[in-house]
Amino acid sequence: MPTHNEENVSDPDLTVQAVVTDDLRDWLLAELRFPVLAINSRDGAPNQSVMWFDLDPDRSDTILMNTMVRRLKYRQLQADPRVSVLFEDGLRWVAMRGTAELDAEFGPALDHIQALARRYGADPERYAGQERVIIRISVEKVIRHD
Image (cartoon, rainbow, N blue to C red; front, side, top):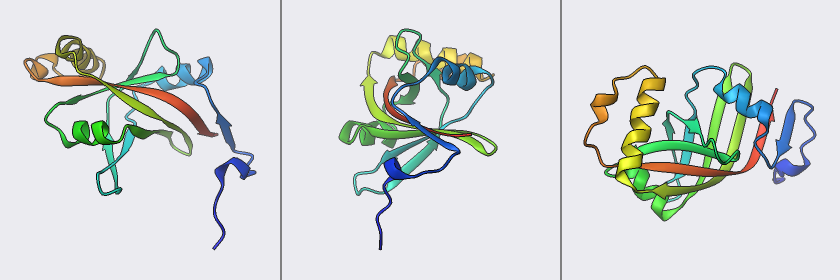
C-alpha cells in the first residue's frame, strides 16, 4: 500500500505553510469558532475535544486554550505535547500542528478562562476557584483548505 506524503500532494485547494499569517488570524477571530483539539493518549489513540480559544497577542504563532488540572487532557499533554487543532467553516478548514506548553500559574489561568467565558457568552463566575492551566500551542505547520 502506498504511503501518503502530504508534502507532495498536489491539491489546488490546499495550502501548506509554516506560519500563521495576519489574514489567517483575522479569519480565526472574525467570528466565534469552536476548534477541535486533537492530542495523543498514552496508548497512542487520538483524543479530541471541542475547545474555546484565543490567540496570543504577543506571539503570532501561538494559540491559547485552557483546561482544568484534574482533566485527563492535562495529563496527556504532559506526557505528549504534540497537538493538532482544526478550525472549520463549512467546506473551508484550517488544521494547525504544533507543540503545547502548559502554563500552570493558576492566577493567570483563571483570568484567562474567565476572559474566554465572557467571549463565548458563558458566566465567568462558574470558573471561580478552579485549578486551571493555559495551554500555549506553538504552531509549526498550517494546512488550509479553501
